[in-house]
Length: 443
Ligand code: AMP
Image (cartoon, rainbow, N blue to C red; front, top):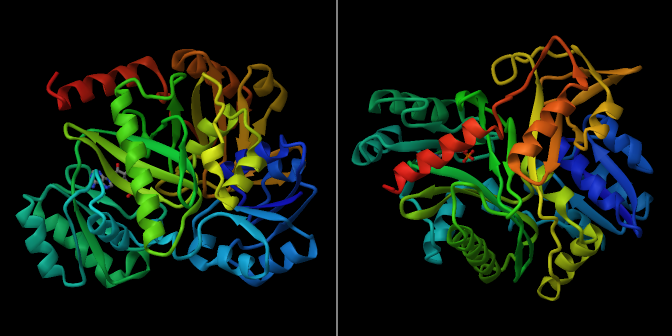
């Protein structure tokens, strides 16, 4: 089958590797930057803006594409799924309407309320800054301020992390409204959930979900969870599919929440097909929904897809055909630690155009995996852009071993102008998470 993957980040690189393992697939790619890893395994690729719908549809038709997988959120919001399906091409990704679960945060919160879904937080949206200020005061300033539209995870401001009083909160609300941050003069104010964050990703076929192992991402730039929010600096998962600070019942509750959301979307006439991503805060009162994404997470896709023994193309077809209830996931019982290599200055002002030397043999010999993200290729080396450059994933029996393996693999990457959060997956950081969660739960 001719399979087209849309997107050129590390998430899409791992998706391409998963598809490439399938004996029945020939890989095609459309990406806005040339990902050296995807370029190597795709039969054909085109450098193209992923939201350029006429071009993508044209490419799919000309290359007799049977099925399309969409990695990033922007083409979902632009309606790429619908446009391809109108041409009779199968797509394993949600429609524009179903993707509103990610692209319209206010609609998402209202849907949760309408269907009485577990794990809700208090919220209200505002176009008037003074009314927003009153709501912030009513919640004692313990709020999170979110632009309504997509901001790549970078427009969110959290009480105590980014502002410490109502005046500062009000100031940011005004900024969002005046500058239309996220594309709209509207802001969402949510109750701040306190606890440990985790990600649950699942496959969905409109009715059924098959949940994957849990992952914990690290959004903050600096070690110890300091500094600005980023697209994600790295992540880990545990061999048992849970996380060291969390119990099986928490996992089951999060899976139930995703199942309830799939059923709600079905009821609304927009059945959800494709991978779905739930970001949760584990609080004293169970998991609360922070965000739902209409796709895999980046980095989290790199923690789960390499563990999948099932044929991924077969699973994608099953999502489209609505037959996931007949499938069972076969997942390796191993831990993973993913660390992103980012350009120096990333999150503030990236130094782009700087050389990174990558010794692929050394990385592979360590047992780790390498996924390229946003880089430019020049002769025998690559150079940084302003976005995340590449990621290394250690895979072993325990988080500790996977972390050590990942660090060994990182010795194969050399540059004077990169930054890595080396604390991700270390015992010190994991023990902090466990202690934090115990204190939240009053244990
Ligand atoms: P988002 O773009 O919605 O994923 O938000 C970015 C980050 O802000 C999340 O990873 C959380 O750490 C934090 N955050 C967002 N919403 C909340 C909330 N309601 N309570 C606590 N933290 C939040």
